[in-house]
Length: 202
Image (cartoon, rainbow, N blue to C red; front, side, top):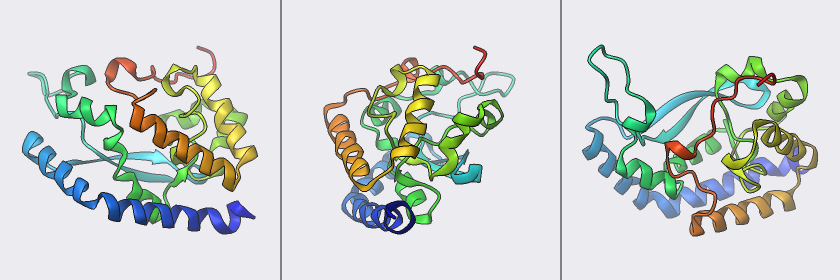
């Protein structure tokens, strides 16, 4: 009942309130990033949503567009800026995804949307993470995040799908806020991100 009728209302209420409260911060960050990168402060990337439907994820840019002499982008570690590292440490780069939530691409709580290229690598059980809308935060994010193996993270995602409830979403939301405020288990840079998922044979 919650998933069918009230989860979407839950998402809309919290995301609209969140945008209203943080709107001044949104403009300040956008201005700083524009002055830093001299281009749009917003980064768009295609990600799979519910039922693997592709949408464009909205984030603040944390990396420059620096390229080598042949025109190829430099490695991520060389393009991550100081302001980008700071934003990642507080998860501020994720804030524009509230727009994705309002549009219905995402939910506040759910399995994190991963790369489109991973879709062909999931086994049938792992693919179940797409039975619900992806979230800005989720059960895996408050239970280890990047310290987890991919197999562990996917198991937590499927557990969430099977146990989804209003009280679970509230629990995840408040634990996430606590972790952000204490900067616990937050991805602060390239060296702390997970290696790419290469399938279930690795």
